[in-house]
Structure formats: C-alpha cells, structure tokens
Length: 258
Ligand SMILES: Nc1ncnc2c1ncn2[C@@H]1O[C@H](COP(=O)(O)OP(=O)(O)OP(=O)(O)O)[C@@H](O)[C@H]1O
Ligand SMILES: [Mg+2]
Image (cartoon, rainbow, N blue to C red; front, side, top):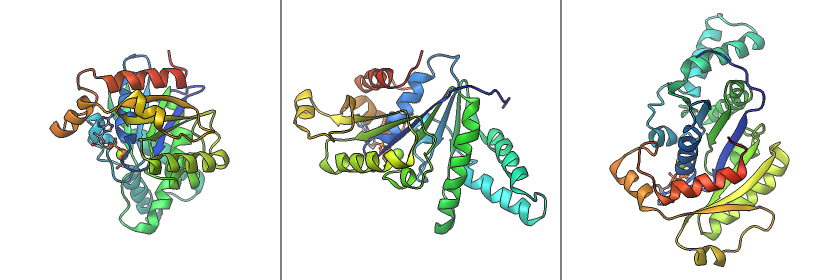
C-alpha cells in the first residue's frame, strides 16, 4: 500500500459489553463511510475473537499477532537490533499485511497462542493505531468487550469513543464504567452512547441512562441484521434496512464526515 500522510484522521472506537452489537455497528459505520470513494478507511478488529472480518467479508488471515511473531523471529535471528528499526519494520509490515478492498483496508489483532502475550499484542496495536492511522481519513476500531482495552490505554489516541449498549441494565452499567475509565485513559474529543436492539421509542424512554454520557441515537431491533447473521452474509452487501439508516443518523451527528 502506498503511504499517504493525512492530517487529522478520525479514530472511532466502538466499545461496550459483550454481545451488544459492537461488531455489527462497526461494520455498518464502515459501510456508510465507504460510500464515498474518496474516503480511505481502516477497519481494525481489536477483538481476539475476530468477528469484524466476517461482518465485512474480509479473510483476516495475517494479524497483528502474526506480525509480532515474525518480528520476534527476526530479532532472535539477529536481523533487527534496536527499537527504532523495529518500529520502522512494524509500520512496513502492517501496511503490507493490510487486506484491501476498494477504499477499505482491514487489519485484525488476532489471538496470541499464550495468555501472557495478549497484552504485548495490545501494546503493539496501540503503536499501530498511532502510526498507521495517519494513512487514512477514518479508522474504525471494533473493540474487545468490556473495559480492558480502554483501561490498558490501547485506545489512548482514539478521537471518538462510541459506547454501545442494549437495553439491559448490565450493558448500561458497563458504559458508565468505560466512560469513567476513559476520562483518564483516552484523549478523546467526543464520547457518546448509542443504544442498540431497541424495540420501540417507548422502550428507550423507560431506560435509565448514564447521566454524563450524551445519547446520540438508538438502533432498532432489525430483521435485516438478524437475517444476515442467519444466512452468513456480510453487512457490506445486505439490502438497506432501518438499522443502517439509524447508524447513519447517529454517526452523522457524532463525527464530522463529508
Ligand atoms: N440492531 C440489531 N437487530 C438485530 N440483531 C442485531 C442487532 N445488532 C446486533 N444484532 C445481533 O446480535 C448479535 C451480537 O451482535 P455483535 O456480534 O455485533 O455484538 P458484539 O458486541 O460485537 O459481540 P461480542 O462482544 O461477542 O464481540 C449478532 O447475532 C447480531 O447479528
Ligand atoms: Mg464483536
């Protein structure tokens, strides 16, 4: 991939409790941003469980974890001595590993073989977000469930934090926790709550929402998303459905996109 340095990429991270719709919303946001062929978008699957690749129709077969293993192999063979040359190599390796389709590039963190390696791969992901993001206009990061990546400052350079919850009190509690941790650990410009799988406006009105987190919208429970899941179709190619329009309305109010 040729290197083009952008001035102010939007770095959008999608976070929340497990199963609330982070991957579906990330994929739909990417689909919407990709409608304009002039925008260059990087999709990052930061969840070791790897769901965004499927939701976007990418293979995701060379991951950050693979890149790390190769670099370690090269260090062990004495091919790379210092941190500086390692970081240079990292940028190069990441750009080479990106899977591209039209104006969307894809990268997954992958799943380390050993438990203890996960935080090292996360640290690498943080460096990647910081450096490789400058080649894109928009970076959309499908985060791991829960607060760990926020807590460990993997997402410290994110500019827009999109906190997703379903109607469950547990989901909303996780949002509150992420919001308070992010205040310290992320230098974001904006953080917002987006509700997902809501059955009606009446249901939305009954929820007790975190008082400090602005709500930017709610996405209905949508058979279009459900059916895509059942049929194993990716969300880039499914027919228009209400959830897609609700995500469009939400991100239009949230990030500055033209
Ligand atoms: N608005 C919606 N309407 C109907 N089904 C939805 C909607 N949003 C998400 N789903 C379904 O809910 C399930 C969980 O969604 P998704 O995988 O996007 O959540 P997640 O937060 O990424 O989960 P995980 O924490 O496991 O990564 C999927 O089967 C998805 O198809
Ligand atoms: Mg997911």
